Length: 291
Image 1 (tube, rainbow, N blue to C red):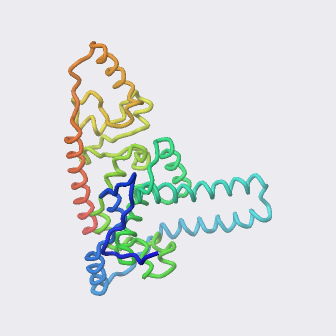
Image 2 (tube, rainbow, N blue to C red):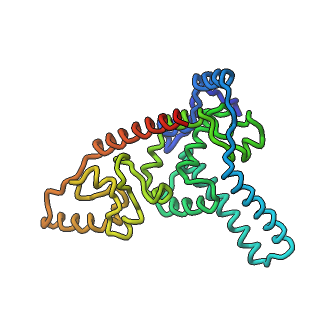
Image 3 (cartoon, rainbow, N blue to C red):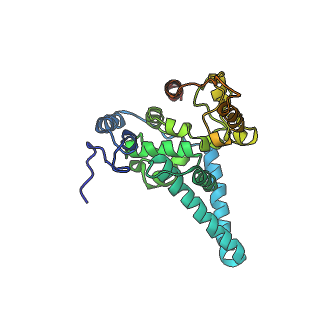
């Protein structure tokens, strides 16, 4: 296998073609790496422990130790089988979900599989999919630098779990804010993991997108979309097959009883979403400076 050359993006083909999106998640920036190395030499950074996280992990490890004893001496075989199942579910939930599907886009999945992986990820107790994927993209793009959330140069314990017990290095926040995460923030399935809704169209208002509401309220879950584009009869981009009100109107439009259906063109929607991404990046930069 030839050595990896950081100056040349790795290329993977999808149906015989390589896309810019695929490259974005795999390419390390040589200039960035050199700049980060220089910053690391000059900067004085003091690790700040998050004692709340330390307390939670002490409880977690204590519970695991007790569970290990029970596994061998007191647990019934059904309990042992259940533990093994949960271990497999949580492990695959991370590796096949936020890692291979959402961080690297190494394969595509249909909505039912995405929903299954999202819930499997929850079992692992490793943050939401978007946060996990953002940190992992940082890890690949700025490997072994201070912008790598679990930088191995800070020691084995830090890279294994210590990074979860302290505040992130300022460069992790700074560089993380530059990553384009719109492919995930616009993913309807992940809405459950962002405060029961997300705001791809206007981050300044409280109205959010909710797939749960779409499923239970005849397609009315696109609240953020509706407030941004109030005249669009669809009220949402997500899950057209479950937007019963839209299907109802579409049916009568087919037979001519409804007409002049107002919609917003795709370019306008994408442009609006792009503006929100820029706003989020600016907010993240302000927060990182304040921290």
